[in-house]
Image 1 (cartoon, rainbow, N blue to C red):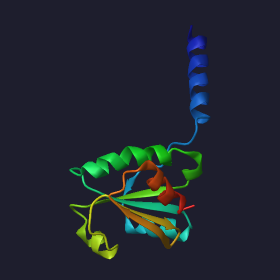
Image 2: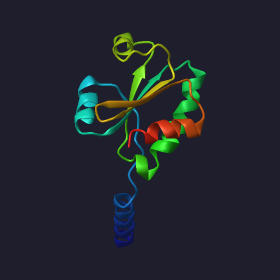
Image 3: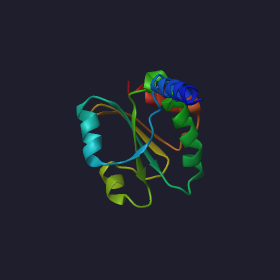
Length: 129
């Protein structure tokens, strides 16, 4: 019986190793991580959101679905809290929650405010590639 359990555990472990990479999860904005991603030429999305914002809540599942696509596997998503990170908002010239800013390395390639149409958000993300 122990051999069977070991075999099942080994098979489960092997299956985990061959699973596709997880989608890009948003991480809290960090100036160091942001600059490192820019210098590395990564595709970047800065997402400015607030927990009370209905538009932000609509954007999140759209972004999660798009980030799970293989073409966006390198995408780095940085989240800025609209209510508590006012210094970053001023530095990035952001005036509203639900703002999405796309970068290809160090170059800003697009910006959107309040967009909830999946195809428009997808178009913005494509500018990071």
